Length: 353
Image (cartoon, rainbow, N blue to C red; front, side, top):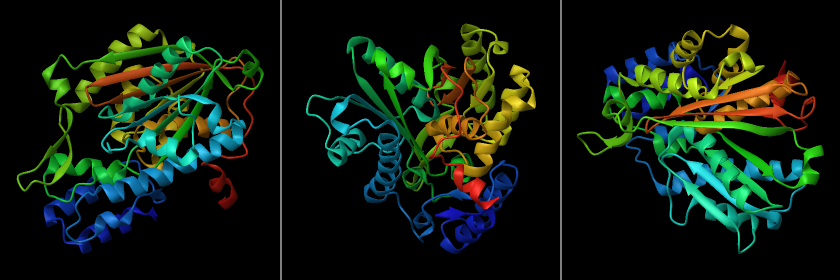
């Protein structure tokens, strides 16, 4: 499923789904996107006359979610029946039964599991899910909480020619992350991080913010995500409010900003006056994996771990923005020197170099 920018444009042309202007727009955006030539996406979206289908969406979501959860269970040695809380977030794909139910069924989880499925919150939903998990762990002592963050590219794909709806095609790529949280006292010795602070900012009361990213249909009834020209300004205002609440950036050794696009990362770097070293994980993730939406923050943390940058006592700040309009941030404190993990999305890179 790996795809280069050149192959993306070639397949888009062959599909017959886009006019010349739409092809030119996608080609121009891809060149400036900061995305490399090794990202992943379901190439079935380039079929002539492609329409989003639940079958394609479910197939993609199950592949990436089940893979991430399987790896996590192996790494943590936690059994599915021992998980008390499950939270899944996916912005656009919202099935019945839910994505969380798909995971419960596949891994045969306990019948009294506290299960939640978050939708419509875009790239910021991963941190929202962590906040919900934190609150639930406060209510359920001696419990494990599993958070799964993903987005289904095959279900966000737009096969039309409206300029504002073509941008997500260029950026969104396949990916998922699974995170295990625990409030067992004995897990502290093996946990990598401790949750220290979480701030959520919602600008939905402002119409410009509310309408900046939305799912809609074009004049021919084709669904897609519309991104307004105001999104950079809207995002900047939400970020400013969030960081003001969070505290000074100097307090963090590492920053993981959701890898939306090069333009967005440049704006965030300028607004927060960050040195380039703080941007490395985000830029590398964007180049290698594209915009994997809410799971992007975890690919970035995986990069820092793979490079063995995270030392005991370091604070890692994850920042994400998404539809609503929301900006969320979370701060983790490393409980140990985090060595290079046995499983990482970056290991293949090392083997190839």
